[in-house]
Image (cartoon, rainbow, N blue to C red; front, side, top):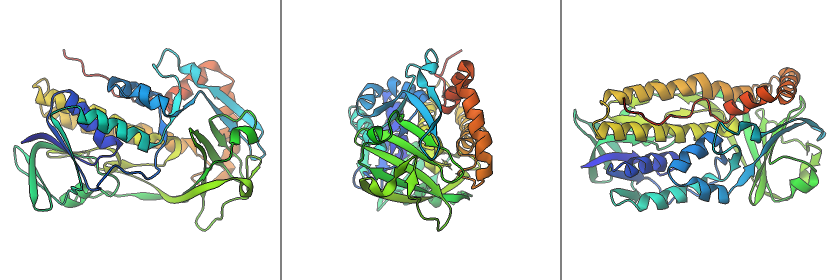
Length: 381
């Protein structure tokens, strides 16, 4: 019998599995697809997450493949700089005082390669979870005509979780009044917008957006009302003049499970919570879920913690999402995502005041970097 089955081979599932495997727990990852996903999704890795990935010996390679964001900038629609903050203000609070832009598809192969180096770990592709049954001592998972048993199941199989569906766990969600539009461009925005930062927020009552630099392209991310066409100009740039590599529209919703634990099943990442994509907080929170859960399960397996520690984990992680992640994500786009542009001038004025104060900047960046909610190592008493 496996120690733990993990449903989902995304960044959350593979992180949980690697954390468990490194602790000597036998783990089986079951993924519905036949290979790792190559779809463009999350691309932001925060300092707190880099600190955690360093413990898994993955941070250096990931950093080498991404774009280091050493400063954050705010501009108006014409391109004038409103405020700027240096990430160096986080020195002493993290081993990685910068944000990293790297595709989720860069992280998952690194996790998979590291996981496969552990003899007690197996990854099975083309293995969708189709049914789940629990007993007092184990959980059984069916894929096709094959059943697998484990002491626990980690559901990290995304926003459309089949584990959640098999158990009939409700997942109430509420939509935001805007949709996101991502535009991928090969145009050199760093040349077209002199002095632009690798992460630049355009904040203007007429139209706001975000500019993110990745190693081989830039992303322009806008939030638009239903049926609203994309603007012609952004930050002094005519979008029609850009080399567009592709576009992607998606709905914005939020939802959090009532409990991240259901018997011997533990929910993490998008299977447990979805939030606004602002600030790239949701995937990072999911990775934090996974490492915190992996550590806790390892303590339970090693006899250093009772099974009740899993309930404590579930409450702790849910509180982080409800009390910190969702409010922080929504605050970052006040007047943008809520379609109340009248709020923007006050929000921009507050940002300029923060940027002018060193201690306020440090506190702002620490919260934006998730350093206030990063899972702490387990310490035995």
